[in-house]
Length: 162
Image (cartoon, rainbow, N blue to C red; front, side):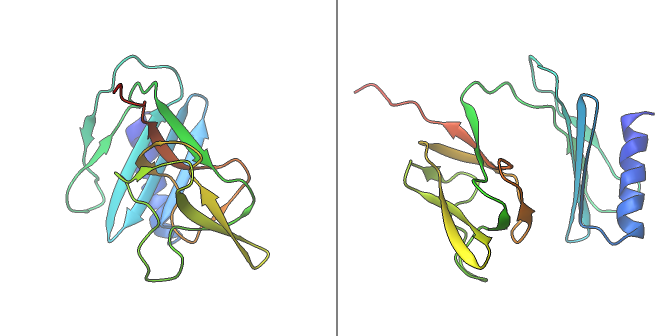
C-alpha cells in the first residue's frame, strides 16, 4: 500500500472516531498525524539512516485548507532527546493558561525546567540536563507519557571557543 493511501485511511479513521492524534509504526516507517484547528499535520519518518532531508509537499484530500509536508529526518549529529523520567501526565506549563516552560527555539541549560510530569498527584519538574536549543516538542500538553518516552528534541550547543 502506498504511503499516501495509508495517510488517507488514517485521516478517515481519525474523523470517524473523533481523534486528534494518531501515530503508527510499520517496519521502518513511522506515521504521525495530528489534527489542530481543523487542519491536519502529517509527519512520516523513515527509521533507516538517511543522508539528506527532502521535503515532499502533499495536500490533504479531506477538504482541509492549506497543505502539509512529508519531512524526512534531517541528518543531525548534535540532536538528542529529553525523555520522560517516569510515567505520568505531561504538562508544558506550571498551570493552565500559564506560559510554557520552553518552546521551540528556547535555549536551555542543564538546570532549565522544561516541563512537569504529574504522577500520583505529585508534580515532578523535569530539567533539560543538557545545554542546547529546543527544536521540537514531541508531546501534546496534558497527554500521558511513559518512562523513557521522548518529550523534546534538542540541538546540543557546543561551547564556543573564546
